[in-house]
Length: 558
Image (tube, rainbow, N blue to C red; front, side, top):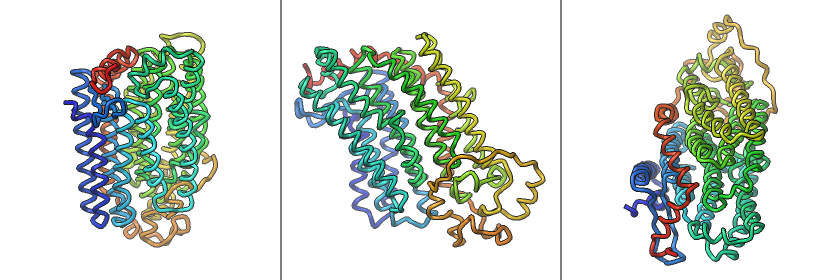
């Protein structure tokens, strides 16, 4: 069944080629994209079942001897493939719904579909890669596709944010490429299974330099502190589905690369204390940034950074328990963070903005939107019994098992970060969903404002920098655009609720509901998922299973 291993990369690439030929037929593009990603999800599920039952699968694509492209589908890679495929499929459906509503089925969707599929191929290639150079290729595919997606619409803010993103990404790629050159010069190979033995023969100082360079490159991509300053300015300016898939997946590819290299290539744990300190700073600084924000997208971007700290915590502990908890939390966070950004897109569509000072009463105006926000938000904050709570408990138990002042400081920092996440989420709920509806919002009738005025309003001050980051700020709200007026300039008396009322499209609500259900299902299936994570962690730390699987390939055997 090794023929299945390359398919998660090949299918999206073939889909991208076909959609490029169908640029004048948006309906055919949508069909091809949906078929490609659905098939990728099915193949990923099959790889997860096979790797769980029979162990890792490996293949040398092309059979070019030592120059072949080695792809390995062990449990960790297969689990990441399943989660990423499910998320990219839901985001694709959501983006199709948004494109239909916005009336831009021809442009930029003609570019969107092939680029999105290429991005998916880059993600899957990075997860399956069995050598460092192919991992680098996966990152470069991500960079090219993500720059196109980030600047869709070519607005000033998006071009500015995209430029920052590209400069930082190129710096990371340059460091990564330099590290690859040094690794190859020192060992004569970039195959990770072969590097397991050859790196062990190098002097300790040289190994430390190579490890540091790889960590620096992957740390930028994963947005760990202090290499995360680019993220809050880059992600929120993109269209909602693009921001969602970026926030959910791209940083996790960097985390995955750290997990893979730190366990397989540098298992001696010489930088574990450094990783734990960085994890603590990433958690605390990220969440302090979140509570200071006045825009939902920027707030979510900072929570994204802070929760990368939890993932680093499990990696830095360098124990099977810590690593398995980190793998579980990675799968959980991909789903939950993507869902919240999709909900932010729905808020923007319904209310015309994601700025907290322009919102209010969404729970009354759109109850389903309130549910879609509240469930993943509580999950992100780690409220029992959601998967976020289970993952954090697993991380804290692993840290307690290690002991020592640093581990206990991480536990305290993680608990404080969780409480501050809950505060930030509660603040969004109070300001955007609970208080009196803003009369400038589309679909708000004067009667609605009067009625809700009878309910004591929650007096939570809106603080933080007011930055025009949302698409609603740039292009005007969807509903307001329909009426041809800016939301903030509409006097209450001019509103005709029947005319300006906004219905959320089913093709945007549906995939969001599916991701909320998937995030909840992770709670129900936490036991089996933890079991897969524990087996993956044992294989990663043991290293023998991975090395033996790759060494059995006739093109690689050593």
